[in-house]
Image (cartoon, rainbow, N blue to C red):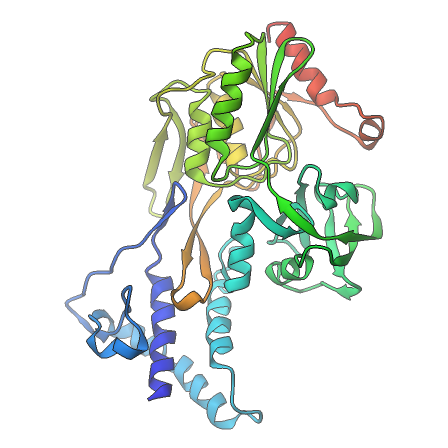
Length: 419
């Protein structure tokens, strides 16, 4: 009986992946697959269905060829349970490993399985608080790579920079280790140290840093009025509180009648799609297309700006750099396409695909599946190429050491000159 339940749960997990829905506006939506006329009975769990009441669960259908396809899998399952030397096996670990391997076989770095710990950690920055070093990272390359350190974080104070690669953690080589697993090694309880071996491509350096983990409170938005009567807003992430914080700060700054506005998206690693649409709606007139989602069948979904934007007329400059990724690239791209503002800085990260995050049942983590590509209003693709600024301005090590910001200076210059 226990074996049948385990098999049912594993089939269920696989079926959920095959039925994954679409990620839109930060909300996961699922829908059932209709029964086929040439199919055989195949159990699919619904919310509230547990092994205890599985006999009462509704059933759907799956193609006969799907059942046939999975015969080698179940043969392997039986072989290792019958013949492997160290018994009993951890069936939950086998189940999770099967899901992870299936998604890795797709060959897309952004399509992957997250176990329960990885899923919670991946969501923590958008929810506003977690324990770690305080950096947005890319888990898809050969090594875990820093997209950008968070402001006032242990990572920033340790001098970590965009494109730094973590090649060892506490002296253990991370070559060939999945980025999600490396991330778990980097994160940890507040107050504990972690030694990272960093490879910095820009200078060909390799060095160690010891960072004491902290409870990271992720900021959403900060703003101030510069001396030249220019409003400055830095957007750190597209999370739960971004829109409300942005509107509050915009209201305060616009009340001062500034000459122009600088929107700083440097080192912004992205976030929720619905938040990106809301942010763009503050700067782009209602009804205008702000982005497209293009799917594998050629169809696409259109997103338009919402009403009530507070800053649709003020002269605008957007700052970007190599740490500007995902939702922040789409935001800058839409502003650039409409000529609503000019973009200053360096070429952005190039993360222009849409992932659907689907939580699996019984707290077994989640799957992240690439389902679409983002296109700007002029149908430019950003994936793997990034966004090219209107004015390319570098920020080099000497500038940082001297506390200079030529990118910000250029933005001020453009606004004072009337763009």
